[in-house]
Image (cartoon, rainbow, N blue to C red; front, side, top):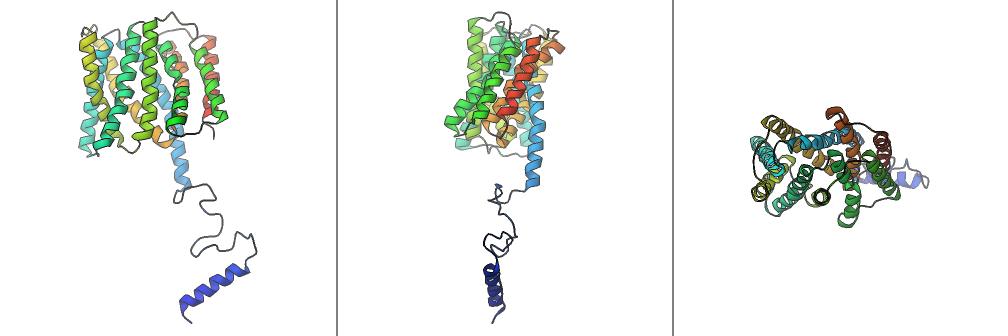
Length: 335
């Protein structure tokens, strides 16, 4: 009898001697006793330690993203007083795209090509040109930063509706309850603002659509593109569209160079490169619906920043909105 036959007989005997239902019995040669990877709910080859590290990174990135995204409304309110909104956006996109593109070239990051490049460009036009072109124009028409944040704070509901149809993501009853509480928190956080014109409100809604559709499109088609090159392409493809809009609908000029340069620097380094790198990173690690719930916190965070930086009053309703919106986010992000 050969060694191979002896091994097969020993293994066969072990299977026969094992009691029915005994999980300690060998189920296959070379597999350790205990539950299989499929039974534990983990993907084959996925290490639990790595999953925990990924979750920890996600929890750390989320509050930073909310803070930096909210700061964009404050900076924008200052910037549109120094220069026309589309002109401001044009310089933002050109500088951010050039810096990120130069870095991508220096490290030899892979660039998207063919159909993948087209998807990156479409997502960029929605994310950048449509969203910020409309939003900043609304701010220049007198809409306050808090009201602008309120409109974009409804982004999670729209993302959930779109993600369910386009991405096939299931939205649970608990998540819908979280969305409802988040919406109430958004309204409370910025309730009682000054009157807003219809054109400004309409533009803010257009910006909301650009953000929501862009988020779902990004999740569906642009997940496997390098963050550095993909984001650079999105900025650079948006710049000529915004520049053309500035030439057609504005009188390009710089009214105050100090605030213009200061806000432009923050927009380029923080709100463009930093924030959208974090957003794309989170979209790769979580569902579009869960990432979208973070936008429920931006109106309250914007109100807090406006109180600290612009000396705007912080009302009781704002504090209530922060609390209710936070509960909504926790519910919507639970498994």
